[in-house]
Image 1: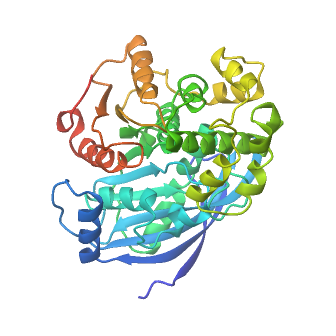
Image 2: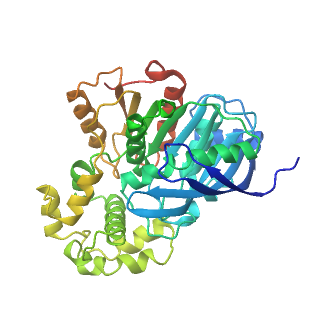
Length: 407
């Protein structure tokens, strides 16, 4: 029987959810044919081992995301499943920083320009996993301002997508295994860390994570990462990226319950441009360029802001908000593999090193968590994604014995 292009589902959720019903819309985003998959894989992962090409079904899923302090809202995401089935289980993958709605996972139909989605789909679906990627609240079909760096809300987007993804797969007659694997890159690395912790603290044993691969994530938001974002550098490209991230953070807080005055944190020309530029719907690259053009002498931050970050001033609303989102010093039970990029100018690799130190101090040994540093003159935050994904795939397949470790 032919599957309808749009399928509406009313379903009851499992006890892991905080609400009773979801109205889910599963939309056919097309099929990536095996030959196309093979060509894209070779291009994206030039040095990776060969794969057995498979057809991959792409499905846009619209579902309700719950939140403790807000009513549930409709959000969106992508489910990608090999047509011959995903016996190894489900990879919940959290994407990195995006501000433009056109590049979110649910919009993906095979375009190469959407690397944040294409990479994880190609890496994991070709290995026998289903790939589930939430857009996050405030992106995709949700019209709120994205709560950037809100690890708790963003990680919840993936957890709440689980049941809708299962129902969507059933409607498309796709088979998925039962194991859960968690990963994410950049901003998504922190969300993946939060999701792993939530899974581990769940009372339902069926919700346990087999393995987690956390890639270049800003886990120590209030300390390591905040200081890194405000660090001055002669590298204009790095400063442009940091200016974009700092403005994105301030805007998201200001529109999500943490009221601040932009001029208290940024030079006036930069502060006054934040909302107008983001409201234009430009590409992320052009948003960053337009914002940095409003900086003063290659700088954008007020001395007061730098001091609050340096002394970890909990009285400052931004510092306080970031402290609440830190997620790196807990005791885990599942296997966690953390990867960072030595020359990353967007997310400091010290985030990973600090997380490892804190976990070791809590008694978590190398059987529980290990990390690896990607080195190379040509590897930065963007180019480091492909090798990090291949390491995550190998780790999911074979555990610590299948991947290199820096300790």
